[in-house]
Amino acid sequence: MGLISDTLKSKPVEKPAQHRGGKETDYFLVQITIEDAEKIVEALGTLEAQSVSPEGHTTREASHYASLLDRWLNYVKSL
Image 1 (tube, helix red, strand yellow):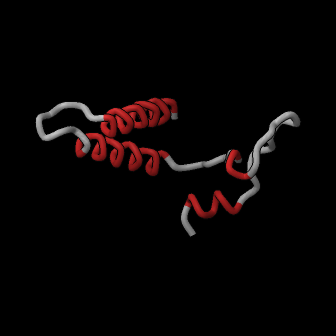
Image 2 (tube, rainbow, N blue to C red):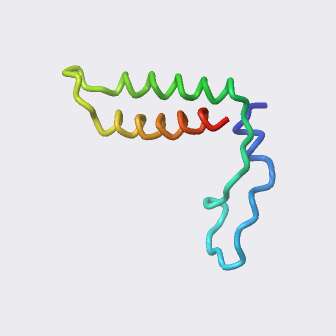
Image 3 (tube, one colour):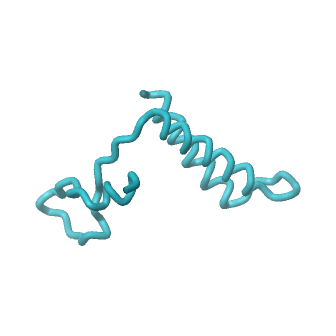
């Protein structure tokens, strides 16, 4: 099985007693290798570049991928 499907089959992180939410608000602990994290960074960089307009302007989609890319780059640097 894959990382995502295996993770979703595991027990979610325990929610605080006062939490009001169903399964759609579950959080899971995900452990990935640095190699997998670097692949995610590469994929997000590609998606960001592909989402720029033909004129070279940033689009909403490109900004979204750039934001995700920044977070993943920070994560990889912290390893």
